[in-house]
Length: 331
Image 1 (cartoon, rainbow, N blue to C red):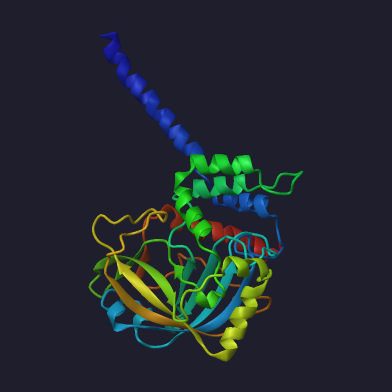
Image 2 (image 1 turned 120 degrees about the horizontal axis):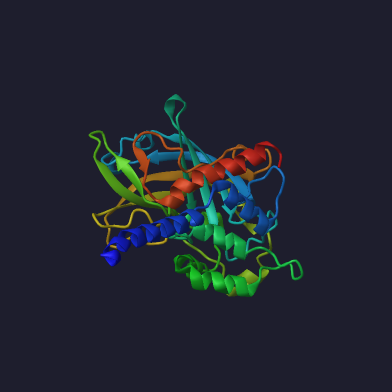
């Protein structure tokens, strides 16, 4: 009888221990921002991540095909003004444009009646963390050694071994050279979102912005000679010649598709529709330009598009808010 009466107590104790472990693994937005600062340092008044960037402006015109799935004003067929920002991942404003790291495209759509909609993307089809904890641990592993002023290779090796959810993006970046221009790069939404139509029917979606100029990456020889700051100049020069365009291609999810893990790609056979075209008409250095003060929070969404339960997507909003607050305070 004693053994029987002890089982619930043991089970309860185990449950408490498991809950305690999960609680200890929870990471707050301030902790993540501080970890980014620890890895890259702080540039006062600047973004903590994707610090190096270029501003641009243009418009977006949605399609009828997209309007079948979403009632969003994005897909009205009317031109929607856009403020854009192109960037390199990380908190180093001097990072060379040849770095094997992510490139970002952030868009603010200025809809009628003062509504805003944000889309933030990467030039990798997946993210490097299934949870905020993985991203936090990566920043910890990237902290510079005081003597070498470089990350400790052993810490990075240990991080990769203990975080398999980081490997797909790392492998993609290792296998693909950086783009010759932002205009020659695809950008992926990485997260799952939900299109909501006029009858409140919901369709899970993921999207990719595909460059009409075509994909083009630096060759190994070009990588050695491209220089540290070619991306901004290339985009400014390209927009001076003619507008630059990306087609928004949306994949429609099926039951069972992963919706809460940005490290897992959907099968390639998912139905795809062209949801619209982004046109960039001008670009300029970010200092004092329209994109500089914007907090491109991906959870800023107008009616007709909603967030999934992806924990990384939902964590980005408070993390961006912490970074934005520091920027406003001149920190």
